[in-house]
Image (tube, rainbow, N blue to C red):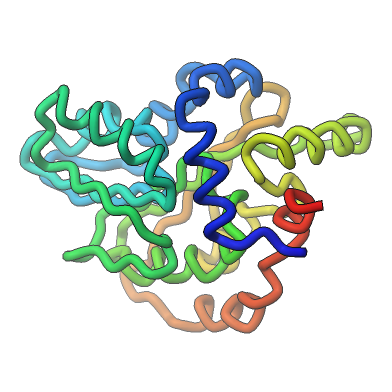
Length: 238
């Protein structure tokens, strides 16, 4: 049985209060979110979309990048996560941060975006390719899309860690360590820049939208969208 989007939302509602603990459990590098935001190359006054904003841990870095003149659109499927992100926003009086509870595959930003950030969220979405394509379409020419997430390290260690990674994801984040988001972004962008951290367990990859964007890359992944309700979400339900 596949894990549907409602199931993903409910799981994240339950773990919203444990995100700091889970960051430590997964050895998340302390400056990974800051580095990911830096890779977008935002300027004051820019507009940026964060997909899977969670409890808002990336919002301080995004706010610092775009300033009070810019705009931050943040979406998440979990009410529990967004409630905590809203508390953070309100406490800091960030009036240019819009939080939306929705499926990222259905979201349309009010304006063309200068940047898009997937924050430890890409691997959790059963329809990640369609979400990627929709976000890419809303990105202005010259804008950048960044995916920051975890992965299995390369080499023999990956085979040793896979059973434990699958078990851990099943009981916590519902992520899929078997997909390769950097390849899917490269198919859309025509090439990427990628940096790995913590012995290859985490990465940041970035694609820049060409100034003249041909639609062919979008079409190249469209046919595979239905196939992406895949192993990660079966794992969670088994």
